Length: 201
Image 1: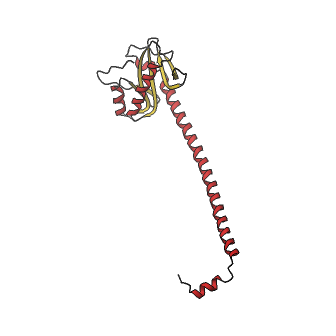
Image 2: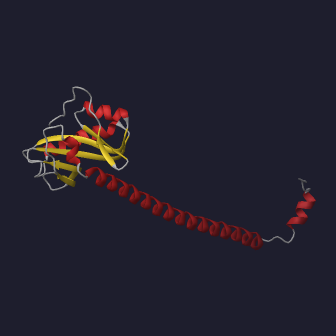
Image 3: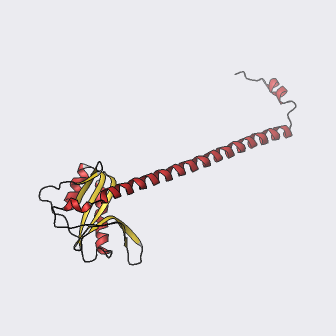
């Protein structure tokens, strides 16, 4: 890049006035403002598209969760025929309220027979032991704030899912939960370990 001499610089500056320099600066500023506005508009449009996609994915996740709940809920009582329960009544999405009628949590599937009730948490994928920990806390809330269907009944717990990882199954059994898993279109009760005693809350 050639360096201008003082004479060349003086020659180039001829004819420049304050007004011309100011006009050039104002034009540059207008161009910058226009580009900023266009970028802001593009960013806003992109944010709307991301929000729409997020809502659609959320709806899909809810739909998948509801489908799995429906598949698992069908004829669940048959899975416990080896136990002294007759859990032929099934309820879905049973809310748990506190003393101020605020919803604390809900039970995905509640099975009942007049003496026993079973609160089942349904996961699309149970891949973390924290899923079991959350259900343990839910069981305490159910016992502390029992809905009418649970009042005076012996309360059992279960964890079920489209997929249940092996370490989650083991942890759930150690916590006293039954474990169920969706296999194709069928639900199977995962055989508990020898000496398994279901916890009664």
